[in-house]
Image 1 (spheres, rainbow, N blue to C red):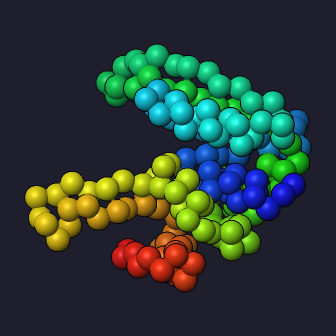
Image 2: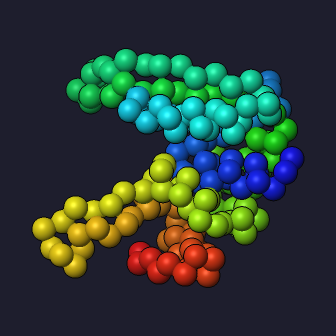
Length: 164
């Protein structure tokens, strides 16, 4: 496994990607969903993962759930199980909770950050000029200590300061 692929998949995992396994399967697989208008990003991820294990992309129409939530049309990408995903799972998860892999965070560069931003980032549109255009990364699932580690890594590697 080359470092470039490890970096790309790690960047996908820190964002919206997840690693899961099935009962009686000892290896993990990668899974990712994205709204239909971002099909090009789903295709790019499928291309990165192709050749490692089987990659399946399925389309789901929009629907309103029983609790009234409007679910947009989206694509779901899933891979087959592979020891590589198990290795990443062991580094990125504490039990069933996604954490920060300090090992993989060493691979943080502008490409890593761009992938993460495509999953979990947004630009603020605000009536206040001091806030308009600020960039945010959604890190709600990480602990405060992990967010501080991420801020430090982003500043050290990219020179970009982030507030918490």
